[in-house]
Amino acid sequence: MSRRPVRLVAQDAGFSVQRHRFKSGTGYLLIVAPIAVIAWVALVRWTLRDSDGELPPLDITLAAAVLIPFVFAFYAAPSIIAAFRRHPNLGPIIVINAVFGWTVLGYVVALAWSVSSIRKQT
Image (cartoon, rainbow, N blue to C red; front, side, top):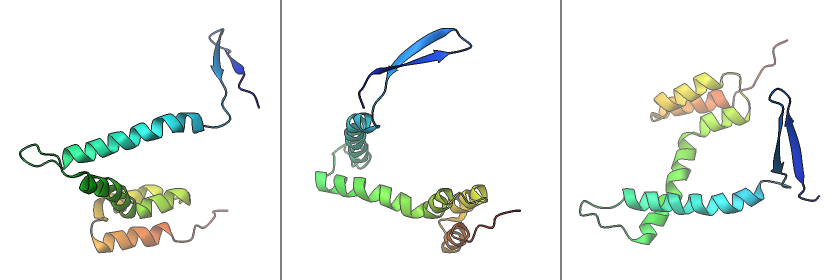
């Protein structure tokens, strides 16, 4: 596949727009991902500074920058599972997970509901 321009025509507006077609989104990902990682580490480091404005050591910053997304993913696991399974009760699962997920009972209820069987309605 070559990277030739694709002509898109807007039917209602009566004009044409040209843009380039890429094989996949990897070109954008190679640009955006490192910038996002650097911004995330800078944000974590800035939020972990002490009252005098001193920045923490880099190893603590990197540990926090890696640990925070994993903690969030674990907390949101019932909602993520329900979304991937296209559960028909996704909305209530998200609400229970967000409001009561910090309690063990609320987390277990949301997790059990997200992995429960999905019955097809006929």
